[in-house]
Image 1 (cartoon, rainbow, N blue to C red):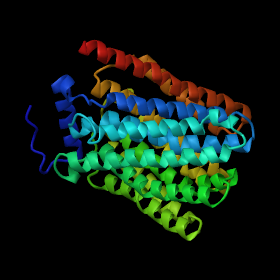
Image 2: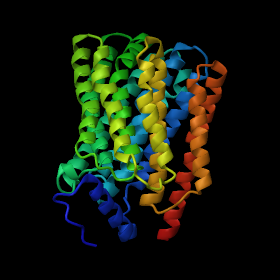
Image 3: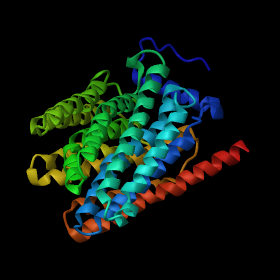
Length: 412
């Protein structure tokens, strides 16, 4: 099937062309890296559920610290950059897989070891708890840096045509990976310095987690917004939306890196200028673009709506100092919605398999109920919400196994 003329086409037209080509070519166009995406997504689900369970362990400082690292550093980037990225990015670029598949697998091994050291298993090593946490962070930085670098090279080497033809999902993957290429070496250098200087303590890692919250939040917003847009009808916003993603993805981490090296705190105005304003403008442009359209949304568009709503409305919490944790939780839940929606998109658009509509709608409602209960503020409801969210994440694993079984049976 010959592609249409894309010299002056929009990103949405190119998206439609790639999807049509993928559906018409059948197995030949399905990414060979679907198993790699499943491995990253499964590791993300494991990290997310382990982090959620640690939050229920009481007020133990070490457990809460591990909870923060597992959710911020592992669950979000592994699901959206590793899972959805390895599932959907090759289909969007019209290729069979990433440029460096072997590097991705090495990165997965390092990240799996890191999750093991950061998970509740590491909590039993009380005398060397902080040391094992530092080793886990070094493995995380190396593994995620390699994963991000592979994404950047894949997009730059395999992009079809001009940058203006790239979809918002591809832009979000590229920009999010570039942000990690900036952040990961700096974190690795800081961890190495702390390990070599003195015996590490939990206070050092708590300071690191607090300092890194700004760039990791920006990463979650960029990746979740890009993945959410993939589930919506084709957009006609031109260059405005990629530009807003770039404002969220790059200036903030660069300024954060400068302030971190100078020993200064990341200023609040930077979060507003490089976070709140572009995020809210992004959602406003989306709403304007879709206003008046009469299209039938696919079931996984519900995940996209939840991700966009949480990622934008969460800034209302950030305006108050007491709402900092609620804002951060809202962004993370938005990333969960985007990741689960990306899984359903991969199943339907790339692998050609459909989950029952009632099942997917029920899955969305389960995740939404868990989110509302967790953000409500009540300790009892918070615990109940964390359990519901863990169940919503766990449900995905049998779906991925079903897709794998169907794919193997079809090829046999």
